[in-house]
Image (cartoon, rainbow, N blue to C red; front, side):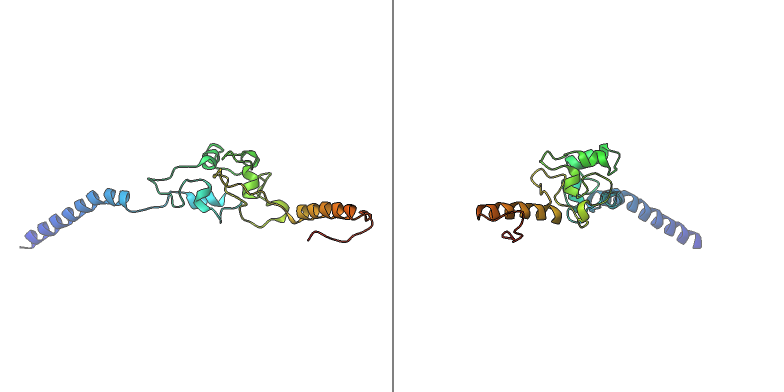
Length: 167
C-alpha cells in the first residue's frame, strides 16, 4: 500500500511540475516586466530623474517585449552605453540642442554645467523638446545689456549710472 501511495504522490508531483513548466513561458510573455539593466544604465547618465526611461526609450515602462529605443537611446547604445564627450556633443534627436545641453552636462565630463542642479533641461531623445538653459551668470549679463541700453536711451552715462531698470 505504501508503494502505491508513493507512486501516486510521484505522479501528482510530476504532473504539477509538468504543468508549471508548461505555463511558465506563457506567464513570462503576459506578465509585465521591466527591461533588463535599465536602472543601472540610467545611473550611468549624469541625470535621469525627470524623464527616466524616456531618455532612451519610446515608452516610459519598457519591457523585454516592448523596449524600442529613441534616437538618443540608439546613440547611447552605439557609444558603448557610456556617457562621455562624444555622446554629449551629438544632437541625437535632431532638435537644436546637443545631448549634453539637454542633460545639463555640455562637455560630457559627468559634472553639471554652471552649478546647475542635477536634472535634465530637456529630453535628448525627443525632437520636440529642446529647452536651452540660462544660468544665473548668463541672465545677469543679459540684464546688464538691457539696463545699459535703457540708460543710453534716457541720456544717462551707462558707465557711471548703476541703476537697474530691468529686473
